[in-house]
Image 1: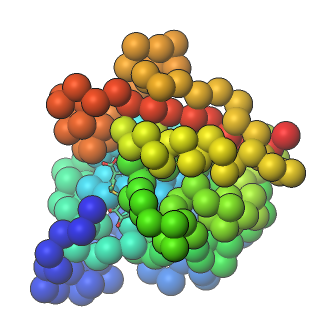
Image 2: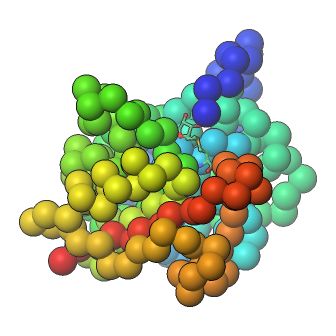
Length: 212
Ligand code: SAM
């Protein structure tokens, strides 16, 4: 999602009580940020954040961190956050490639990747959020039994991910080429992109990856 730059968005984000500033300083201390020891789940590339905010309201016993690298996009999420009575969600404006500087090994229980940018050109493959490079980052912060859940309507990116993820560390635990008509879709929470593309008739693909 590339929104036009919104002037002043950085300033608003820096002043927001919902955004964790200097998140590297919280490494190993996220339980203090939330004030409890509940498990932490994160969404990488949350966009406007509808998905993770809905999860937070459905699961008050879980802590959530929404990650978005563009201030203008995160600002839209903050506007949605206003007025919601939630004490189990924070946001960060960072690039996910730096997550191992922000979380200790095992500090995260689950990682959600939703409708990640496809980066179709081979020379940009490393930027895909399911590339080997990013899976290495996730390996450094996820609990041993933690999982990565990835949804998309982009078949090229999905097929790439099914091939690229399995290796020495990771395996695909389950996947579907039609989430909305499969058992994996039970209790599914839609993202902004999911709503848009599924309403056009696009099937939604999902995989869950975990350690071997
Ligand atoms: N997850 C949302 C949804 O499903 O509606 C938004 C999808 S949008 C296509 C992907 C988002 O991921 C964009 O807002 C983009 O800025 C963000 N993103 C992509 N790469 C990222 C990275 N390395 N770190 C943080 N955010 C990233």
